[in-house]
Image (cartoon, rainbow over all chains, first blue to last red):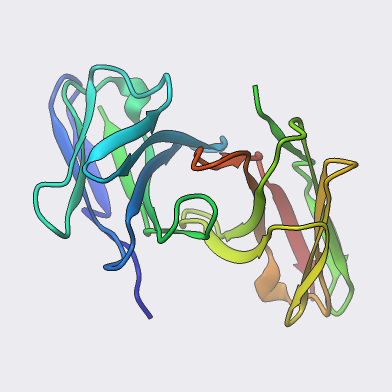
Length: 114
Length: 111
């Protein structure tokens, strides 16, 4: 069964460092998303990406964040200068037809900023 | 502000019973709703989607949507201990806007 894969599963970084979280969406999907979940809290939307550009972003997704699809398969989230409050699980998701259809989530990257 | 509200629980049911999970949402302009199951420390796993008023059944799961009352529910029949998890309700309110998640309801099925 096709699945969304994310790497790494766990990343520990020092405050102020840059991190890149990687995702390989399901191959025939066209819509890609990043969500995050701070421990014990809701899953929160960060950004959606379609046709090689950002289609929507939340107020969490400030200038420290960026996304890229460097090739035909990977979808990355970069945090330029991490803060303690960026510690969370980051989930990549993909969908065949936007939110009119089901979105499938990767297993997540646990980011710990120390 | 589009909101999805869930009772955080925990909801405890005995093995074999029906678990009923509820969700309300704030915006009448709704399109689709999804139920995800999340085990502790794991990612959300899609278990049901529902797009129109009424009931939708898939195995032991039934999703119900009532757009007039702005209410979505998930019934789990013959609950098993392996169903113990947090159940997330998520709504897609229009077009390709991203999913809005509730806080989730923690379900505990007691053997």
